[in-house]
Length: 316
Ligand SMILES: [Zn+2]
Image 1 (cartoon, rainbow, N blue to C red):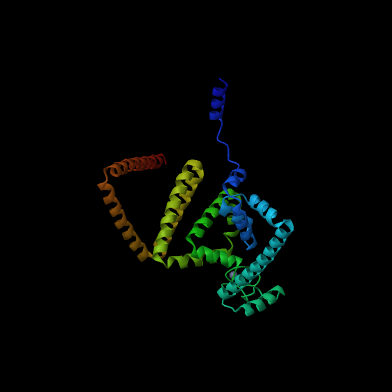
Image 2 (tube, rainbow, N blue to C red):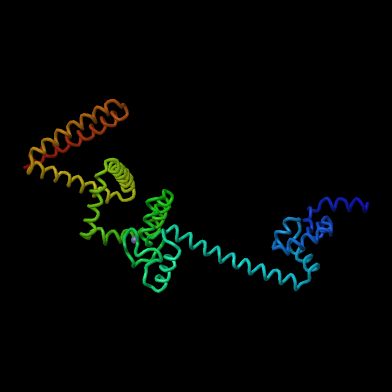
């Protein structure tokens, strides 16, 4: 019964992690120890030897200490450190030379530039000023560019960066909506800003594809904004529509007064557009039904208006 209990207990237990240093010590014969020590003396690290024999790093250190003595081990390690230090120095020097080559200078020229830079006479060891804008006021960022120009450079060359910056902009805008609105109120009306905006607009208009994209985006935005406003701020929406229709009316009257030929042409254009639209509506039964319904309502309204006018006149 005792044996049975013991077995079940053991089977329930989770498999324990093997104690590697003890288990593998038995597997590796002591004849290997001298090989390990030889490897250590030739400059291999404890960790690399341990990997090779499947032992722990600590175990290798113990074997070496036993065979060589602690003092000897320390000496070897010190010598190794010195070699490593030299190697790092050489690597750093190579790195510098590589950088000088990339910038298009010899190592001597680069060293000279660096001395001047450290003395505060030069903007950067290899550059006199920013490659793009020529400033020396902003600090150097990368590739011969100041921080501002390097950001722009990345924006121009990397699609991933463009996406990233757009997303971060959106995030920031959503976080600081009030601040953005206040900023726009303050600065969107300054003449300088307006001139700049105009210039940008005309530049964009030169490329028909870009301009078409811009128009499509604008239309989509206005549609979205209006539908939102109609629900959230109905009074403001009505006022806006009224204002815009009045402005259009005023523009038409002005044109009629000042430039009748142009007005006639625009009327003709509108007529053609209207005909096209009506043809399109007539083809679609759903749209046509809606069109008819609206026409009926508007005719009713106009009839009502006429009747009221007549009544008024009769009263007078
Ligand atoms: Zn710059």
